[in-house]
Amino acid sequence: MNVGIFANLAKPAAETTLADLAAAARDLSVQLVACDRETAGHLAGAKLVAPARFGKAVDVLLSLGGDGTVLQAVRALAGAQAPILGINLGNLGFLTCVPDVHAVAALRALVAGDYETARYPLLEARLLRGARRRRIARALNDVVMGWGTSPRATMIEVEVDRQPVASFVCDGLIVATPVGSTGHALSAGGPILHRETPALVIEPICPHTLSNRPVVLPSDRLVALRIADRRKKLLLSVDGQSHGWLEYGDCLEIRQAPEGACFAHLPGYSWFNLLSQKLHWRGSSADPK
Image (cartoon, rainbow, N blue to C red; front, side, top):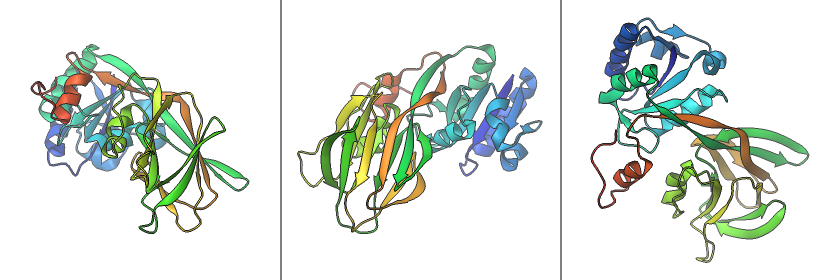
């Protein structure tokens, strides 16, 4: 079994956790695989592969870090469907539900096949600038246009399936998946969607009028966002990664990607327990399994 390792080495617990996994992998006759030399250097006996081959070289993938590391791991797989399991090396996250002290136990469970998988949708963003159209990236969480080059609000025209919806005067706009509904969209006042809900969220950031509210759409809709303000450029962010500036007349088309991302869940996993702990709801249970 080839187990991919994608790690945030800046986390204090990373080096110890990687050493523990390397020792356990030897006992389990498991081949660990990394796509960067620094991570491989912390994994005795690990195989180093080129980033372009990483997704096809692993059967499952352990992401060690926080939620941001999981998002990077999804990009590293480049569409490959190896299940991802997030090992938390910091504060409890929505995508990293296994604490670092249980990393070796998680590896044993993966090798034994003692886990379930869930497939979550990705968004695909394409930029239309004049006669040019190019794909930007795919997102597990969200596509965001916002922040901008001045403190002024801007105007963003929204269409769904080529039908005009509204012109939002706001600081920016978020299009989020159900997984991403507990990320930036939630902090902007959006709803929480169960991860299995076939939907996406359009969430204005700091709208000028209170009547501009989040909109929940079926997941198969085509969303088009067009910048209608000449005075301000907006930064495009996909899963927290900058993809340059958008300017007047640019149109961003967002739709569900043909493929999704596959995640592994160990026995005892509960999305509701995770949600209640992260949001400090009353009645939340102890540490997640």
